[in-house]
Amino acid sequence: MNDKPWSEVNLLRPKKGYMGGEVVITLVILIGWGGATFGFQFLQKFLETTAAGENIFTRFTFFNLPLNVWFTGQFLPLWFVILCIIYNLYIDRLTERHSRTRYPYEHQ
Amino acid sequence: MNISDLQIKLVPLMISVVVLTSFLLVGLLHKVRESSEYGLGGRSTGRLGSGAAIASNWMSAASFLGMAGFFYLYGYQALACVIGWTGGYVLLLILLAGQIRRFGKYTAPDFVGERYDSPTARLISAIISITISVIYCSAQFKGIGILFGWLFGVPYATAVTFGAVAVISYVVFAGSLGVMKNEQLQYTILIISFILPLMFLARKLGYFWILPQFGYGAALSQLSPEFRESFTLPFAGSSLFQWSALCFTLMVGTAGLPHVLSRFYIVPNIRDARWSVVWGLFFIALIYWSAPAYAVFARLLEFKSGEAVDPATARGMADMIVITAATKGGLPLWLVGILAAGGLSAAFATVSGLLMTGAASCSHDIYAGFLHPTASEYRKMRVAKGCTLLLALIVYLIAVNPPGLIVEITAVAFALAGNTIFPAFLLGIWWGRANRQGIITGMLLGVLVTFAAPLLGGIIPLVAVIFPITSSALCGAPLVILVTILVSLMTPPPPERIRRFLATEVHGHLD
Image (tube, rainbow over all chains, first blue to last red):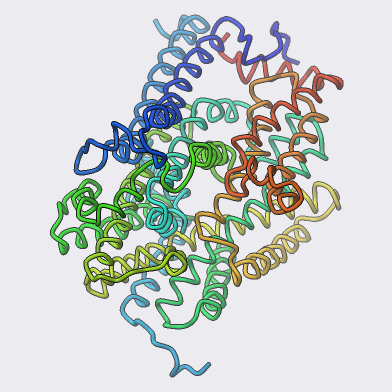
């Protein structure tokens, strides 16, 4: 029987320690994920000058692609890879830090 | 039909047979020698190899054929698929991957049954998982039918029958020999067979061929200005809501797809599992950066030849557009054959994996878990074999008259996963108070929401607007989560041992 003290798991009220750090990086990545994906589409809608969605991004090109197509079709998948790398680096450090606290002798 | 009626493309057919046979042979060798010497294969390849395995597990006819077809039809709107199917891996990594691994249950039904301490919830999630597999396989069968139609020169209905016989034989053969998949090798073959013909096509058409993923921009600029506008403007063919709904649905569907979730148990440790997602996502993105190029080249070839394709005809040929672009672009038949072999391999591998796991779920979760708990191993094995054939038959019957494009059929499977499995995992991991009453209500509501458009859309048109059949999870998943929370709060909490386990082992393992 596991007799460690515990409190109810709740994403909105994370306990201090490893879970707290995990939730912070999760929220940061979620903002980066949602902001770039849906924020960019909202921005295009906000800036549109015609019903079809013509906007400042559709007037410029990058690699011969309209900027909106390049950003959504080519940059965003790369952005997702970058987000995953940031998340993994942070979690690696977080795990290392908490492992040291819990198993100090193994890290000397 | 006589054999003389067939217009067999012999070279592409032989290439396809060689590729599929090589998968079986390597799988047998892999089984005997326990990996490491083949392709990228083996444990020694670590995160890179595991990433290739994630990508191979992901690649299906939807990625190989459907994506380009959808882009050919809808332009910018189709980028919702590119983003949905890559962005979903971010959700999967940050919300579920490490945690479900620490939870220690290997399949969706096992997780739901254990976390919610409910055989009923487990049964419902098993039925949902099997339904997702059937819908997903139907899209694969359509892809196989299209490719067999091209290889044998026969109408679609005949081709899908040929394809069904071939793929079931493949599944039975692989299953009876206990062939292990060498997913790293499969990914290597898939990516080469997709990108090599694209490079040749770009070179033949006079564009930057070393990285055709960038080269197709110049081709796009040569389309007629009117068409280019309708193709690239963000809301020319759809609204902001429709784009976001499709994108979000595919994202949460990716994070809730049972065969994707179970990948994280195969990698030796959690850290490698997390990093393998980065490689997997990169390898998947390679295909998705490339698919639009086929669509643009196909449009350019039509434009240059003065061929006016009406929307109905374009829709009819969209799922074939990768092959059409390669053929019309003047690529040699052997190269088009490599492309077709890649598409067939992706579809065959997906079907064999999903049918076998679906049948295992029928046997393990429904038959042995619910109907006959005392069934012998022999009996369970027989049930699994029978279920493989039964599921294949259902898939075949759906695929003979396919209800939509490959991407559209696949999207329904994602919507179902996003409305049911994803909320069950998300709340199960991140909210200890979620209980069995809540999740049973939530999953049933998720099923209703997924199929609300065809069931209720005729009576209440607003339902079809809010919950489109391919994109229902934007409104559906939050609704399911909300209802699950409300029902959970109104009913008793789950057993203390589960809440304690969640707090101390899943989230507090280093505290």
